[in-house]
Image (cartoon, rainbow, N blue to C red; front, side):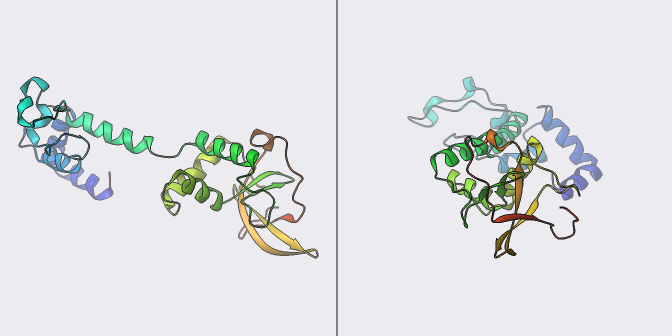
Length: 224
């Protein structure tokens, strides 16, 4: 809940009581919190007509099938059930770590995801498999047909990879490591990303190590 909502609920006893009634499914149709939830969650049900306060507590047997010709009425749900459905749908639509790793494995194996090239988002480095961030996550979201520029989705994917514990952590505790392309022994373009240790978990056999990428210290850190 947004901070403003928490403050309102915490300071207003009537609002707190109304919310408690909704969550326990003991509220009347004139409950102010129910009115807000009804309006916000009206899109959850696929019924032909908009849901009003009374429908939260209406049973299938109370609905007249003739009211909407040719349409089978939807069963009523309680306010708490509607909230649970809303949270479940929102969570299930989020990309998962197995999907990301599966996409990487298949793409690297069949060649649809480039590796070790100048524009590649994946590189075999001495420390493991470098996933250039956030580019590799943008590509995955675009492949899924999702918003590749969604900062929330990009951060969620990166956090999922880090939570898996497959990545290399720098001496300074950094999870995103720096590398640079070299030309004639001099560092040029820099890239940053997450290095997956034991890269055979994503690609086997592995291509040669990209000798043109060298590990560098990231800004504000002492690693390597």
